[in-house]
Length: 113
Ligand code: FES
Image (cartoon, protein in one colour):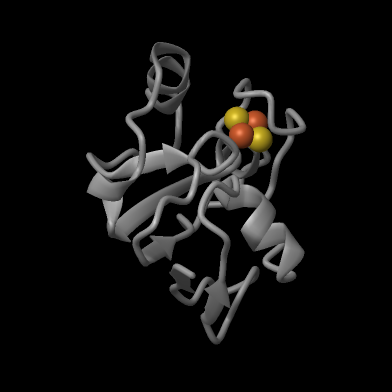
């Protein structure tokens, strides 16, 4: 069973977490099921980018993002080469190290910097 290591995030997961996930589970569901309350403003329909994460390890094990996800990711705050939308990324059979960026586009709109 793959392990999902969530790096510390000041609000969502201050200590970081190590989670167990079934292969085939959408990453955001693993996070939400374990009380890592990541934003998901569009209700996981690939239309908002608030669920953006950076996959620090295990990125290559994930199925590639489709065009819609790539287009949305371009709008994400703090985009990196290993960025994914956690509502679209499906856990495969490898462990992942996941970083939740400090901000989302929602927060920057609200003036948090
Ligand atoms: S929850 Fe909106 S893009 Fe993932």
